[in-house]
Length: 482
Image 1 (cartoon, rainbow, N blue to C red):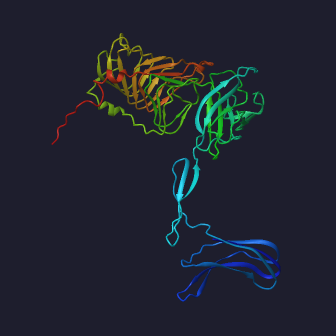
Image 2 (image 1 turned 90 degrees about the vertical axis):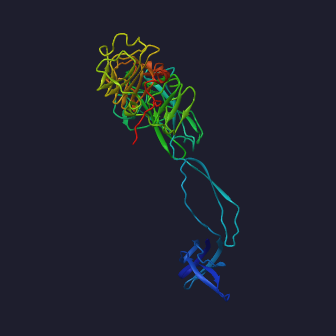
Image 3 (image 1 turned 135 degrees about the horizontal axis):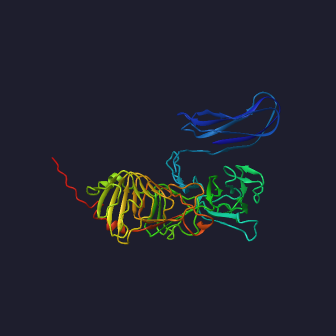
């Protein structure tokens, strides 16, 4: 409970204050007073002061409370505005809310006579998720500009829980002129002073505080030169109404990938791209192991987030689904069946027999090592070759197209021999491709990346039915038991 009183003293030699007592009765009806607490005090000559006290009535059979207010010693004490209020807090508890969003808590209390009050409700919102779902980025030149490297850069960001904050969004950028991120003191001149770690305000179209979607737009910025082989990156910063913040790096001239043919594009973690295409990246279902899908969109608009994706079968598990393979050395076989190369295999003019690409072969080839492509591999329409690789897959930067299926326990490199600033062409991959990690290394010159992807995947479902007699879980295995 709480109690308060206004006191004024004149020439008081002692302290003026009040005490609170619980009032109860014994079996004979005599009153019992139990001290519950004492307020702060004043003394001397003091103008009107409000003294207050919070206390708990801990006596189980209390029938009331009693205030004793007075002055110890001589002097004048004025008293006014006495009040005693009911319970500040009747009970408390704790619980955990594990998800963001709007929540309702229902509660009620019961008195000592068993009377239950009507159910009360409290509403609250939890937001621990920063802004995300970055998309629809673009970089463009104004109608009037000093050069082709003075650009506006834009992107879109969401916050569906508490909404986005205004006047907190900002940006910085990076070019090859300086290490790290920052801004020039004059955004239109790279000859001005470089401010490492500095930020500049955006000129985003106005939006209301709490808006779930906002367009972020930089002022016209000088990116110093037209050497588009080197990635020029803008770092956008956004904050929501709950104070959660996030930033997103965008390579305005960077490469992007394209996936067609339907099917599923899946990642056991999230999907976070450094650059974005001007069209949807895929026409398949997008599956992500967490809630992050950034700069990657589907023409169907089908995105499954926080999805528990089954772990892919390993090299040894797939090996157990086939009959005993025939061992090969360094040359690809010219017959149908299951084969194994113990050690790394390189696809080149020496290892690829004449007519290999024009024959309707059905093969499963296990590579117990790394698989490297130093030339194109283009199969006929009715052929199906699956490479199951225990190590990495490496593709030379000059290879432009591969037509097969690949399942790798290791990392898939799309240009293993590339160097900073190298000019590469689009790599077209037709088939089914699975790896523990993909490293997309292709880059395009100039502004080719606006319409042309750096890596283009086309899903082909034929491998499932053309190779079903060689690999799968429909085999019968007989075991002898004791």
